[in-house]
Amino acid sequence: MDAFRLQIHSLPELIGERLGASAAEAARVVERLGTPARLFVIGCGDSYFAALAAELAFEMIAGVPTEVHNAMSFSRYAAEFVPAEGSLVVGISVSGKVSRTIEGLARARKRGLRTLAITGSTETPIAQVADEVAVTTVSDLPNPDGVQSPGARSYAASLVMLYAIALALAEASGRDVRRWHTALEATAHAAQTTIRQTDERAKVLAEQTRHATEFVFCGSGPNFGTAHFCAAKVVEASGDPALGQDVEEWAHVQYFAKAVDTPTFLITARERDASRAEEVRAAMQAVGRRVVEVAPSEEVELPYTPCPEVFSPLVAAIPGMLFAAHRAALLGEPYFRGFGGGRSIEGGGGASRIRTSQIIV
Figure 1 (cartoon, rainbow, N blue to C red):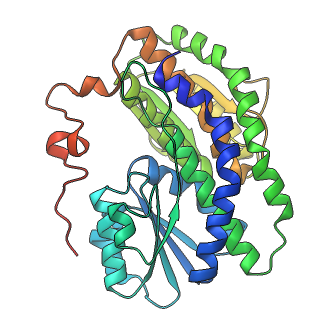
Figure 2 (figure 1 turned 180 degrees about the vertical axis):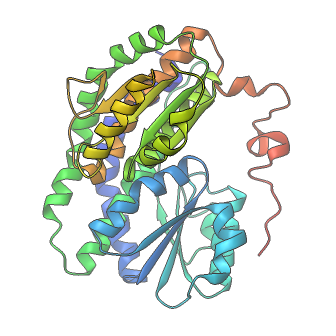
Figure 3 (figure 1 turned 30 degrees about the horizontal axis):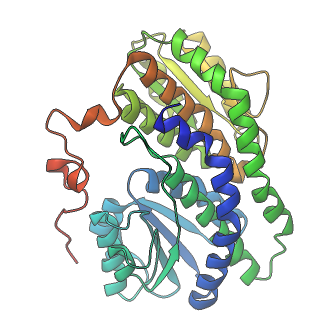
């Protein structure tokens, strides 16, 4: 089993391990920061997708109005207009070294906003610019091949911490969240059964779509983040063009695309999104798309184990990740293009300078 699939198969244990530690960390942070009137959550890449996936939890469980921004949008465009009183800005970076997210928290703090970093250590650069730090420890797996693979564990750990903070905020407001705690704890088992259900199916799908040249992943609500995350894993794993899109927006845009049989993954929780997902699935099929439904049902091509929609991103992302891993293996593609062709692992990619970009405060 290669490094990426090893990460995916380790997720049930990771989720189980992180639940208790994240709950304790979240309770400590919320006690120190208090309950905000509004929340802004920022990040880049997988951290941004995790923020999108957790937005519903903050609003539905904690009752806190929440905005999610990619870090560039927040730091250079939105931060100066955010009302300082009652606002809390949460920046997510497990490595703690992503320049734009560091910049976003630093600019927010300079304006007098309260800031919280979700990161892997209190010693990371992002921790140094935040009022408080919620530590999300993600241990490395044995990697005898020494190959860097697309991230799965850091994404899951960030999601668990975000959900833990939402629950802690709800408890601080006097809400009864016992059922939500139970549901979140159940996601570890749901992840395990989803891997058993879906791994072989994802391999078969990779073989069936071997000659595809592009992929589209669609989701709504919290699974809009899942769609972006799964598309990113395909790009990172096999290098194929892949797009994350909102289900509603697919009907306004990709519906008219020329390539008729593009594999299109419809990720649905069959809750708030159910009626529109069903309508859009029919539209996808009517124009000839190869529709791959990812849903909490054994009847679909890539099933995942049922769980509440608000926590479904922890589980619904697994089929897409497995597909990406199997496609890369089938095609013999190196992850991240082997950091060749002008790419570099240092600084997050040579000229892109993800970790060494100029920070403007």
